[in-house]
Image (cartoon, rainbow, N blue to C red):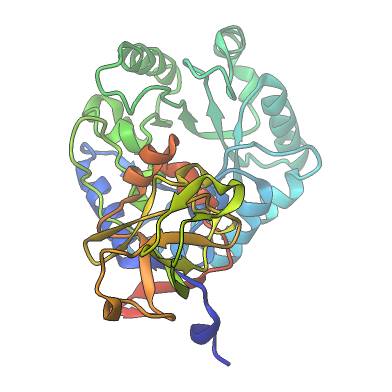
Length: 371
């Protein structure tokens, strides 16, 4: 029995679209700015082992991940890449970072002190980035720590500061006043590090204009097809397609309820199809009774609650010979994008992507073929 025969769902991931999105974003950058790629959380759920090499082939040389473990995995995939770790360097891992050429993003004076101390003992200035908080109130040096560091440059005297970064809080809202506030604050900080590359723009920040690009942009979600602009059509190519297999057809011969909680009732003559996907596969339970599957451009409404493994849809309007068990219908695809699905579910495309489970068969499009 093959995987094709047993797969109740298929998640198709277009590596060529990801590479094309990278090239589109890189082309938007001002002169002197380079484009990196954020591949944290297993490349936003799509498989770092396949996505990162595709981005490297497209010309990406610098990557950002969240955790040390991700950095070690990425280093095994890309021996020559520049890799930054957003969480910094956990105590005790300094030697491992140096051996694997991982660059910590230092988020506090304590982080800086430990890394600089390690470099002092090693007798060698290992590279690192410094993160300044300009409005997110999450990681990064706040106003007080920033002043202390700028007043005492000797705190970084043994390490090699190769990058300074900050992160935009409201870049997806292009006219938000906070964007300019953060831009100007970060520009003032970056001037204190002459000759050091600076990075501010995330996916949406790239579309705010060249004065946000600094020396390096760090796109993430846009690479994977999420719209980085709030008031314009999506400039990115769609990357994922999720399909569910029809497991069973049913014709209702009397009024009955459908699914858990009997939240939906149907009348005699209703025809149903049950798909072998559910919220365990990343399709949001919030779309119970409101979402849909698609046969081409034909919308087939979901009836009743979405369960862990199954979704029931209304196929009453289709000719009986149009569907059969074993066929696959789209849940994410040409008629229902990641962003549209997220809006319906009351969330964001990032969450949809990172929730896609591992039970569906994964097909990767590369070199014009499914692999």
